Amino acid sequence: MVKKSIRYKLSALVGLALLGIAIILIVSSLDLNRIVADLVLTQYERGFVNSSLVLNADRDLYQALVEHHKIIRIPPDSPAYQQGIDTFQENIDQVRERMNAAENTLKDVPSAYEGITSPSSDNTAKEAFAEFWSNFDNWVKDAQALQQMHVEQPDLDLSARIEDSQVLFEASREPINQIGEILDQYAQVSAQQSREKAKTTQLTLMAVGLLTIMVLSVVSYRIIRNIIDSVKRITEIMNKVASGVLQTQPVKEDGDRNRKPGSNSQSNDSQLTRTYR
Image 1 (cartoon, rainbow, N blue to C red):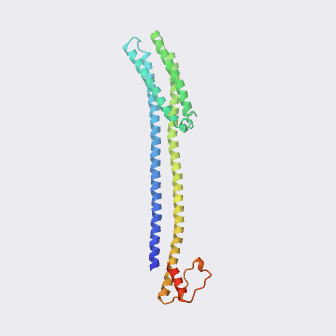
Image 2 (image 1 turned 120 degrees about the vertical axis):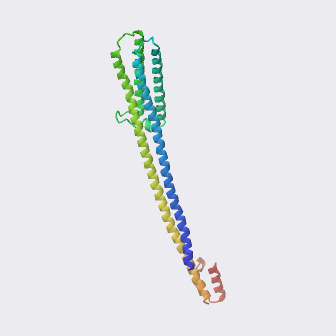
Image 3 (image 1 turned 90 degrees about the vertical axis):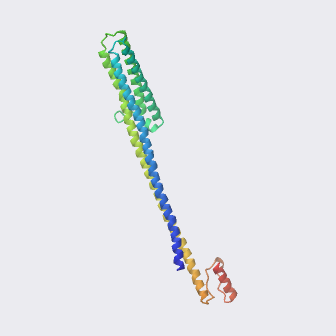
């Protein structure tokens, strides 16, 4: 009964320890999933911010084109002409500001700025931005030249020049579309990479945890078994002593291996003393 009680108590303690380790593993796994979800959300939010900057720049660029067409169709000396010029320049400044902000943000992420290419052109974001700035500056200069021609010769037919200017405008918009594609790809790729890394970490954590539980289980079993065996031997000796059998073979120590049990009481007392220790 005593042996079983000790076994149950030790097993319960070991079981609680192993259960605690299992709970820690489960909680750690859940926390890891939550961290990854937050990271993925942050990456999508960053991509959304950059996409918003690029899309708004594209909208401002189109509004600048609309104002440009209005300007070269109204008399240069009318109040609406200067108002149109101011609106045109405001839109141009907003395009520059938004595209600069988007490019500077992407420069902080080299894998997105130089490592991902657009499906439609094979340009990286770095190359697409360089192409945009070149084409955009060419279109702005051409538009301003048309506006100046309209001021100098209000009655001049600029239809052919407007068509040529439209080609430059479309050339400046194409890199914006490429940048938008790259931003979408970056958000998807980075999210997938985060999930894969989290999965690998999670599996490693679970493997280490299970291995730890198995090792602790085996070690604990051996320790409990040794303790129970020792208690069993001591109990048998005590039962023999209680029955009047004083000449017993105690649990041997290293110094007792070659010593025979004595027949006198002094020898028995020495053996009992070592036994109860």
